[in-house]
Image (cartoon, rainbow, N blue to C red; front, side, top):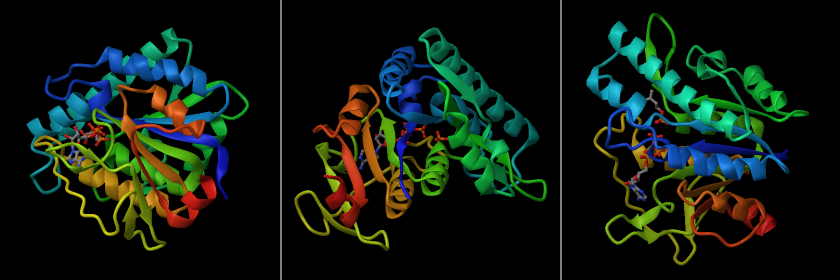
Length: 276
Ligand code: ATP
Ligand code: IP8
């Protein structure tokens, strides 16, 4: 059953940081989204996830955590985790100044042995009900089992939360307008329809359209390719998934108000027919 009052949003690392400049937050990107959340919070409960951008990804590449087999170096684990806490702190501080009421929840508190803990995830949705609080979590390096740690992408967190909590909308923001069928000519794919097995049965304009993807050289968690596969698993569970530019955050309001917007919507064929 869809929780029609809940929206889950990922602030991509490409929005909240300058991905090409190590350890550089993008304060305009953070502020732009915060201002829209002030409006959105009037009518919806929100859970926010943010990515690592030039914080977590920068250090995980430095410590070779994307190429080396486990276990990672202790120093790498400590430094990546600290950098994510630092980025989270920058975001939270800005949110509070802009009159939002964020409440950080470390991903390690709702993960157990590398899997999402359903009860703790449900608690995330509960803690933002009946008050103004917005639970905020983020991609991180987390303990799994047998002395191993693993990088947990914010995109994977989106799919854990989306498939467990069944929000009305799951929205991924990045530094591009949505999914491009062709990265070179920025040919945007506005709609992707899936069958119940998650196979793409049609795009807005043509059946079985081929979607190209590539990932940035220091994206240890797989960039856009990973994002699309997580988005598909959320959409299969019945939730509409939207990919939009985080630099045009007003598009979040267009989505929840059922207005036309620039971006990519991924949904089950049956869900999209019901919703629009
Ligand atoms: P982070 O993982 O740091 O949170 P993010 O969630 O903001 O980052 P990225 O992983 O940087 O997102 O993915 C966005 C990038 O994906 C774009 O900047 C674009 O260059 C790249 N990309 C690769 N293939 C495509 C595609 N087919 N359509 C759109 N963007 C694509
Ligand atoms: O940026 C991974 O989260 P993402 C964060 O959402 C780290 O892929 C620690 C690299």
